[in-house]
Amino acid sequence: MTDSLARCRALFASGRRVLVGVAGGSGSGKTTLAQELVRAFGDEHGCLVMQDSFYIDQSARFDGDGGSVNFDHPSSLDFGLLESQLRALREGRGVEVPIYDFATHRRLARTESLSSRPLVVVDGTLILDAANVRGLFDVAVFVECDEDVRFNRRLERDVRERGRTPDGVHKQFFRQVKPMHDAYVEPSKQHAHLKVSGVEPLEASMRSVLEVLSQR
Ligand SMILES: Nc1ncnc2c1ncn2[C@@H]1O[C@H](COP(=O)(O)OP(=O)(O)OP(=O)(O)O)[C@@H](O)[C@H]1O
Ligand SMILES: [Mg+2]
View 1 (tube, protein in one colour):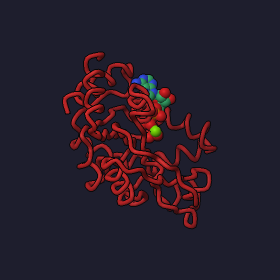
View 2 (cartoon, helix red, strand yellow):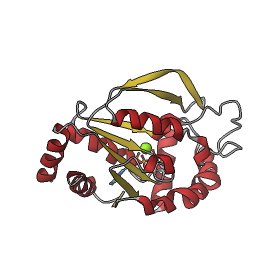
View 3 (tube, rainbow, N blue to C red):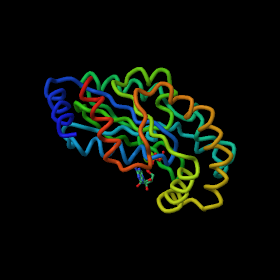
View 4 (tube, protein in one colour):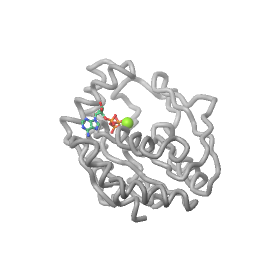
């Protein structure tokens, strides 16, 4: 791993900008891996872009978890804006990332300034499904994880961090998360350059990703 880390650092020092996509089901371990990738190179060399920031504001239509708004369908996300911001970051320009509020399902008026870094890691369930986005990645990773593990992880997170009830999380998972996973997320695995496990130690996934990244 030390060798591939050094090769990646040399790649970044050469002035190249590298985009890494981390896809996979909800609760698979994408954010954990994506954050670790940025951490390995430090904030001055790496940054994280979250698909979740690109939700379309559907607050006017929202009628409860698992209701008529399907947040897991690709049409709930502004992949056009994500594409243009990733292109800008790749060209060395900074962007204004939208801020999405999970409590109110709104896109806030303010944005977050993000300057371009050599390593741009993008985290999202559907980033390999979106045809306009997946082609931008130098390395596309898919984190594999069984449904029961993903459900239990999501339940815990949404109740603790997003103020949801266990009942609402259950309803949303089986009405929307699972069907959308099966229809869009899982099939998008075919576009990944490499697959890693979301249950094995993080170090093993890091080793695989850095190995591929260092050869780009
Ligand atoms: N390799 C791993 N081994 C054990 N636990 C892990 C591993 N990767 C992630 N986890 C744990 O699983 C939980 C979910 O991980 P994470 O938040 O990274 O998933 P996610 O794919 O980003 O989910 P979502 O799409 O819902 O944001 C976290 O509690 C995290 O600590
Ligand atoms: Mg996440």
